[in-house]
Image (cartoon, rainbow, N blue to C red; front, side, top):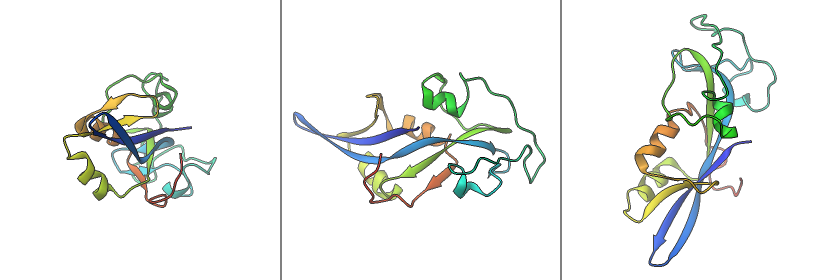
Length: 148
């Protein structure tokens, strides 16, 4: 489960899309220490079933989040809150880039480009930046790979 994002390029009456990447819920994360609670490290957040109960750096414990405020709730469409960086030990999302961030930065600066998710919701550059603030874990292994 996750949500794909696309750079939409408008030229006259036509549009084309380029895959930016995919956001996915990735389990508990200590936002104060910038570390995943995945026992085998952040590279395994989507494969491991074992997460620590406390942050290994500061000892902070997991905070309960409702479906309306959690990363999983965001992916399921229940979390409608404005995206923002969290604090404490709460759920996080990862982002798997399909293009290099520098290429995205070049694209999004053009006046005829905006971001759209797979559900048809459009976002400005600033709104997409807010979305990315909830994705402290970034993956670059899918750059140039056709995936969804």
